[in-house]
Image 1: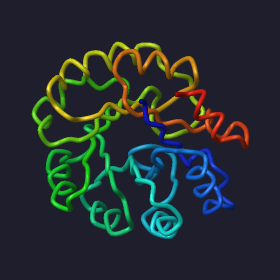
Image 2 (image 1 turned 135 degrees about the vertical axis):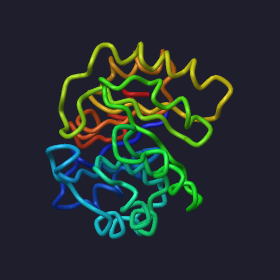
Image 3 (image 1 turned 90 degrees about the horizontal axis):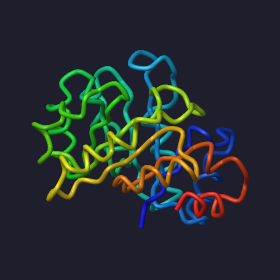
Image 4 (image 1 turned 90 degrees about the vertical axis):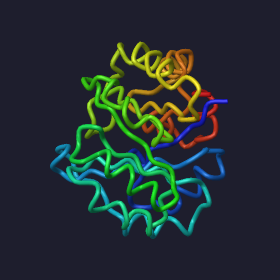
Length: 210
């Protein structure tokens, strides 16, 4: 079954503890944490201290997506904060060495691809990664429209990963319609913000995506 990773970027930041607990009770499979530095992407969100403060309120895996220029400098702090998966962009500095550093802490490593980035950039690191995060919008802001070529890219990556255990995650513009398109082509994990938080019935909203 497809896994749902609600992005707290769309949650109520005035009560994140309660939002995390509500997502847990509603059946979320993991929590997606969008970390932005204001340089790699124009937006600025939160860092390791916020993640550490939330870690004690759920046992769900923390899926941490670093949209930052130099993630190697931050990997250890996010590991110490409680990240279970750390994903870095193939477009950032020294992403291969950063993946190695993530793996050295014994947690899962992911590589993210912007919509315009050719998936062949990850050919040399396939044995190192646990997750390929396909961006179906331009990274940096929530609420964007799904890029229609994304399912084709997912299908190509699925073939690339044949025989390997890595999962395909999709992030951006996910709703009941686009979720079906992505899963049909091989997506394993759906990151959803607006679609989950659009009403307070988080369980119903996630079930609709499944």
